[in-house]
Amino acid sequence: MIKERISTLEIVMVSLCIFVIAWISDNSILAMIEPLVWIIPVFFIQWQSACDRLAYKYDKRMINAFFVVFIVYVVIQLYWRFFTPYHEYTELGVVHLISTLPIFLAYLFKVKLSDLNWNITIKNIVFVVIMFVILREIPIFVAMGRGKEIFADITSLGFIKSFVIHLLYPSIVEEVIFRGYLLTGLISIGFKEDVSNVIQSLIFGFIHIIGKGELSVYIAMSCFVQVYIGFIFGRIYLNTKSLTPSLLLHALFDAYSVM
Image (cartoon, rainbow, N blue to C red; front, side):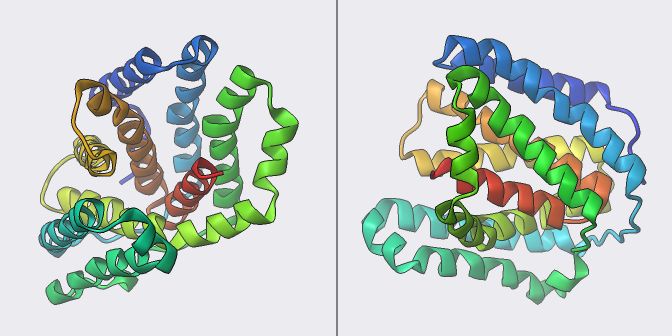
């Protein structure tokens, strides 16, 4: 089933996210431009849905797998965040390996990674690149006037290396957990697509509080950036019925954020 129209719930969700993103912005120009730019993907994804109608099978076992995988994943993140010095595990890459392992717990519920759709088309790739430019490049370009510098950043070996690293973790891991297991699982037990996507995006967004190390109103509001991004990733997944487009965009986001 492909959603051709944006529901009222989705409009409310997008409006709330963009309002909060604009509210917490420290840059006055960016605060004015970014909401206008970030609304584009919601409509642009509709074009994608009309072009890529891939069959997909929902499985109720995925929601059961999600709960176990999610709990273990959160426990691991809490341990690394509060009980291990940051530099010790990041330099060794141990956190990436350990954080990847929970997704395989789904096999206990007879849910395999191969059950998810990993198809990708040239059209999908072009779509991902355009989305990345819309969401990351345009706001920064307008706010800072760094066109040439940004282009140099994303074509550098450092960016390419960062992209490859982030492709495994957190991109594949989080796309499998939130879009693969959770979003698919919610739909399989009877939730509507738009409701399922809002639920998974909220959980995805606020799980990032773990990385903040403290809780405050501002930090909670800042997580709406991840909520909105998670919402967009979910829409891409629902409209293409494939995890690959969203995980590629996810990796691009994370790779650029550390540049």
